Image (cartoon, rainbow, N blue to C red; front, side, top):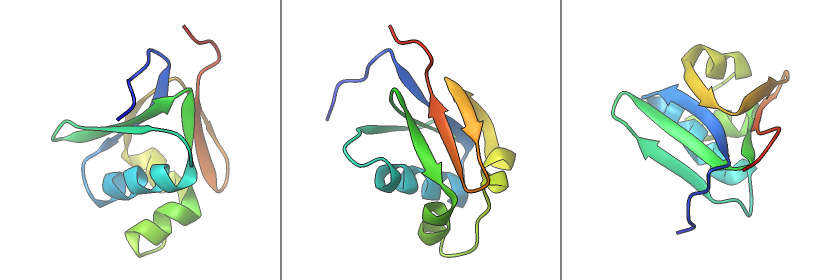
Length: 98
């Protein structure tokens, strides 16, 4: 497994089926990136060095049911870095790195 950097960005999502699907989608939507998932019981912290993208369509496929990006926002309890949401995806990123 890759070493965790100080330049991580990504969502913190309440535990449940959406959090699990987002973690799975993060792996699919960010090929070549090491995705770090920390299970804290009540929430999952999902991060990657420099950030990551979560696509609505990928989460829906992982869930096996319809999913809208606003569903991510509703379940988001926090995030590291910055967030840019579009109609069909959310991007978590850093403006400056250490």
